[in-house]
View 1 (cartoon, one colour):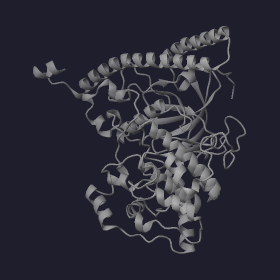
View 2 (cartoon, rainbow, N blue to C red):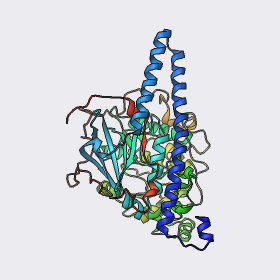
View 3 (tube, rainbow, N blue to C red):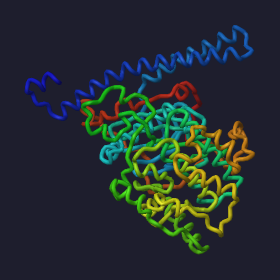
View 4 (cartoon, helix red, strand yellow):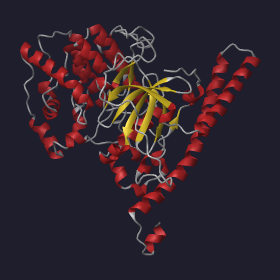
Length: 494
């Protein structure tokens, strides 16, 4: 391409886009081969490590090695096969967002139940969400952890992107809070402790979630927490930056590899306030009077419950849980996730977040002026230990719990509210509020969406096999987890 340019030949954007697509496709192919070899060696090493600890005869060990080799062969065979929406039977719509839906599905050949997240490519490109969706997919590939929702497959067609994840029938924390209004301090201690452990685990992996809120705290069948929705994680990787997709001709294969970092901007705040006004808001200290009477507090709680679910489904969302340093966009670290924990803890005990308002702009101003607006209504009494924990989370970033790098150790050793928490075995113990699950496909803890069609739109078949222009930004999106392909089940007709 450079030789053609130097000789005076003008190449169209379409030609440059196709050439870059071919380059990235080939280089990714060989990069993935190397990654697969490394992963296979790691699985074998893990097997050999487990065989050392087991009191097995040499013959039994050899049988386990043979079983493992068969699984590896099956994984390679199945990984080469194409996976598409036709391999899944849609059962019910269980979630809806600004750019797509989540459906409960059953894999036809195994009978396994999954949650299928569907994202429309056209919306991703138009709204510049490519960086967000790639970051979520890459983080879910990397973060195979008990505190993170597990992703088994990801794939695409000309219309949509698909994430196939474990189905967590307990619903989410937002739904639980809307049902319960407030939680006891004992229940709050349990859920905040699990949330803290989940956040600490992703920080150790190098992630900053930056979108911790009740909507993204999912509950498994036993009522324990798992983190979801990593579309706003922060980091350094090019393919997770929105501006990267504005100059696609400079792409390199490593930019599309399974990586764990992202840098994105807060567009819904940028659309309502310039960088100068954000700084001036902080400097001038917009003052918004907190609730000072029982009637004020009750009105705020009712307004919050009335508008909360609509905000969850909108493109705007809610800034209630976002740390003030994130709004300034002048640099922030893992401490921003701990601020969100304090806001959620306040909501669990009081019934609404500390900075909730009638509109996002007013909430933003309250967050920026948190020293004056963070208050505790007298009509909803909480213990001094709980109040102290909240104010230790919601404070200056350099003084905030977790900002020292000690993470959970700091919570365990310095915060009286968490006294008595069994940090090592909390996930093995019964949840504070048991989840009622009747079957593997029970969706009673999710909203109903009768107006959303269950059928997934089928992609048009291209006549010449040509990929839609600029569709190549989703290269290397496909993923198949070893456990997902090698754990066989019995298909059952729904």
